[in-house]
Image (cartoon, rainbow, N blue to C red; front, side, top):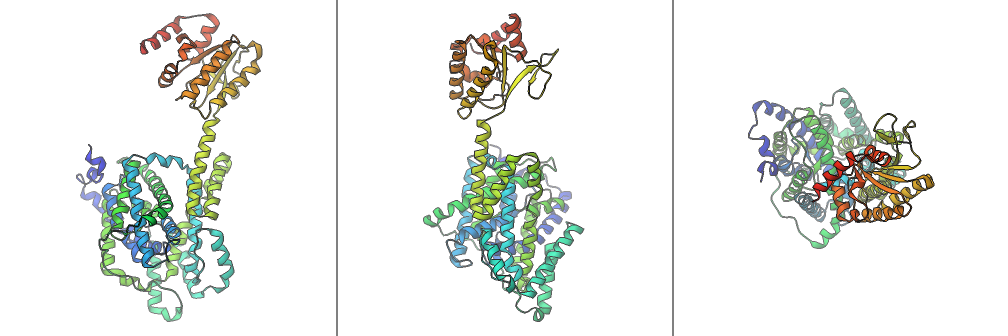
Length: 575
């Protein structure tokens, strides 16, 4: 057993150098400067007291630094997961109540347990069922939902909180004239400052700048801004150890939202990790190890009052850009949060909630990916409509429904594409031994008595009938002149019993019509499946050829030299 693969910190810590520490130190401090105000803001999205955002920035970060396969991904509270928590837990308890907090912590444990089990049983492949268009559509819609929900703090109006955008927009429209002027002005100025600083230099800690601006403004000029809602007291001290309150009925109710968080959290981490991985060559992301790391981060984090955590797009990018190369930057970030919890929470007393809303709105609206939609509209209509359907489902029916709609649509598209793969009729390239698609290459020679078909997919129960129908249709077009059918099998990587049975039935059918059946370029595993299923009882081993050219040459000239060698080679393999 390779201990370094189970505990990735052992890969880099023994060889850690002082030269790396400088970059990790700068990155860790920079990330924590952004994480602290974001953590407070995202806890508010989740419907939790601000301190729980800082709790979620402690143990989960530490556990990921030890067990995560990426050395630069930043773990902690994030906007999207926070909104999903609010959407799920608010149906079970009153927002901000003791029961609500208890359920949110239990949810973190359930999410972590599922992630850990998926990692141990190597189920990371599940992420493949969510295509890029689905992720883009889901992320864009969720970003809009998060952003519009923050208008309540940005404008100082108690708008309805919902994960269905139509309810939020309707309430904003009905109450827009009730906005609080001072709150709105401060929030809009903060947004403008953040956007400007981002354009000037992305490394400037814009969140910290506007947080400092907001605190100083209210502390010294608070009388001029009466009615602006502020954070007020944030408890000092570190979270104590305590087990979540386990309630089987609550766990059953939390499972749908937990599964949503598992998928979203894993997708966020893998997509961010892969992006950072491509910029270096020191480590590689291992999806199953990421699930283990996320699982332990959430499970152990829940024992110290953390709500569900995941990876942050913005903080991970800043970590990499600031020089972070190992998990040491995360450990330094944890130390900074600990110092804040012990000594600095009173500083945030005067922090206006509208400032936090501005930070969140600017951060999440950048996740709305219009470029991807435009690109897919031009290049792939099916993927565009997949993105659009996921976007609409998430936007109007809620985040949890959106993610499952995306998964369902991805599976439907996958089934559609595999059940109706591309079938090409091949022709001979003049003066060569190559055969090409007759629809794409107009100069190829297609002979009347020979039908050569390439099937670009595995041949199995979902597309066997499609193959048979197309084969019969193409053969019928040839008419009575047809004497030979050659199946170019190089693109067929698997065949199941339904596919083999269909082939045997068609071979017998065409045999009665005096039409010969040849196979060219069959892969070894496919040939194994064909022979085990009894295909050799219908046609001989001499009906299998290395390539199309040899098959057609043998049919035309009866030249058995190459064919005999190939048949003997196959025969030796199956003695």
